[in-house]
Amino acid sequence: GAVVSQHPSWVICKSGTSVKIECRSLDFQATTMFWYRQFPKQSLMLMATSNEGSKATYEQGVEKDKFLINHASLTLSTLTVTSAHPEDSSFYICSATPPDRGHEQYFGPGTRLTVT
Amino acid sequence: RKEVEQDPGPFNVPEGATVAFNCTYSNSASQSFFWYRQDCRKEPKLLMSVYSSGNEDGRFTAQLNRASQYISLLIRDSKLSDSATYLCVVNKEYGAGSYQLTFGKGTKLSVIP
Image 1: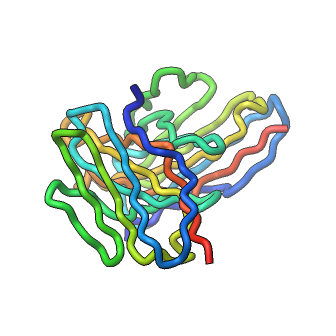
Image 2: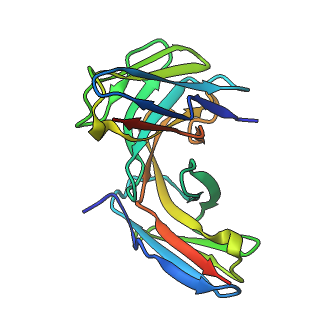
């Protein structure tokens, strides 16, 4: 149990375009989902915390208008990178937390974004 | 001071060796502690939780010292398949029943035949 999927697994886009990444909890309902970003040889950095039915909470330094998060259902959260630039190229990973196990996070396989 | 600090390595060890990783954390309010393993270009996977009493899972032993805010991981009889980056992770509660993970940069281990 506790499987999280992400789609796409990798994407290449041109500078200035927008990219949407989906995160789904496949066998449980996730009241909270987290979005992380990892640059090469760096740690996972939390970008935002997404709660179903409410606005996401962004970490300091993360532009909420650039990284749009929608958590419209208990099994789906989306991250849209708007007007992507090469410096947005990174590994984006989501995780999900079951409602009765708030201290556990289950990670998706990640999405590798390359902006050319 | 970074919230979670680890020696980045790399640690290059021969098969069968014993290797130890250390980690320190700065937030004394941290409540739970983990070691994750991350393979290249993959998501992190939970290796084990860390308890003050120390805990062991096969060849892996984890230890927590709350007074020193220090966490360790010991791997005995290293296998080639242990080659990965090991992430020290702390968890703290930021709201009622809501938790947040903070990751260290990871320590890279290469086990050499």
